[in-house]
Length: 530
Image (cartoon, rainbow, N blue to C red; front, top):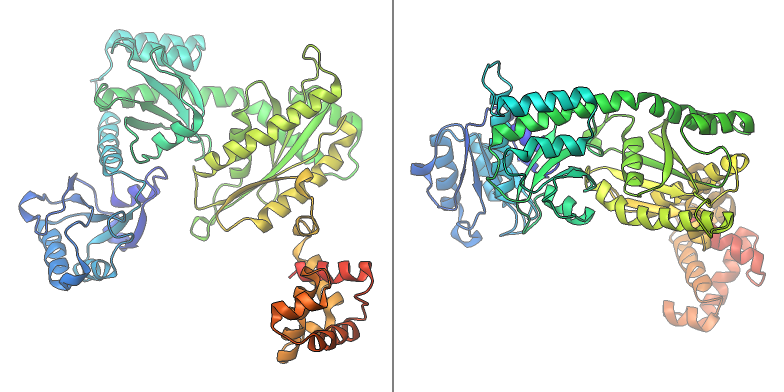
């Protein structure tokens, strides 16, 4: 395992403060945690050093920092992982010392425990050892044979999990996705809420246990993790061999689902065509295993990678959306990726429940979808927190013929979600959330907003004149106070006559009459388009 591998583990959320390619390529030989000012006698060459920086004090000057970092260099440490919890950040003085002595420096956020880092290193080392050619296995021969037979029979992942841990006394173990969704659990494992499971996977404060990722052809959003609540119950090499079996099951399972995923792609492509043929839509829905009659809700999502993740897989949004919807038990849906990093899901309404009318069923599923997305979307986003993850939800539609309009609604809500959310955030917006002029305009494309803004506000936007800025400020305050001269003057600390003069100038330059409601709305909308 190399230093750079730690940076790639989303569960640790480490940040590179300083280090070049050669330093990040160093192999990790072990882990030492210390807060001694001079840890020389406890260090071994090739180790990474974990320090909470309790020894550092800004009032002590650079001597203490120099002594600590030079000790790491003399011992041949592979890297320093500095905790941010004690001081709120990694001191600049420490970064400069590491640069001088050529020690890679990584920042450890407060929510990542040193235990999680230590486990990540040693579990990876055990995994690399177990993957080397060898006739020796950690799992007993009879257990390996039984697992192989169950794989061939197509046993469920739950049966595999139970059989794999039976010879160890069936310790409590969960098979989880990155967002905390439980795929399977042993009979001794209690139900684990998704939020708590997600926190455990990320080593949140107070979280305990051992976690190991199951290697498969997956993404950060739908990866599987073995999670044992208690540490030390299962030898690391045994855990890796069990994970390998589950990985083989996952790959077979994914191959069997390939045709369903292709059907979802075809449905998404068809819904991208304006005025798609209803018969073709019905056939596409049936191919996805969805009813070709009844009500539907459409969700459109986008996953925008951070700048440093440019080139991330094009199916990220589809994987994220499928994972979020999989948290909903009993919901039938199909997901497909669209050009430009967009994903589209069609959710079928179950209107056959006893005592439910079609309308009641549609509204019930719709409410469930929106509530569940609001709860699970942040958990899915936590799988790749440096990306921006947005979703838009349509109103329910009565049949396949209404899907085109539902896609338009969902895309509009998606644009509004993306515009109103903070960078690298997770946000879900629904068509019914567009209850204000500001929310409505948020979904308008940027180029259209710019044209409208410049057309309506005209000369007020011309640069080089401070008076234009004053007029814009006056207009905004005047409209915000329901065109009250007195309150506008009070807010801006102006005489009422000055407000009258400025408003008249605005009317002259824009050609609008602020005594008319429609003209007020025009100008308000233009201001919101900035």
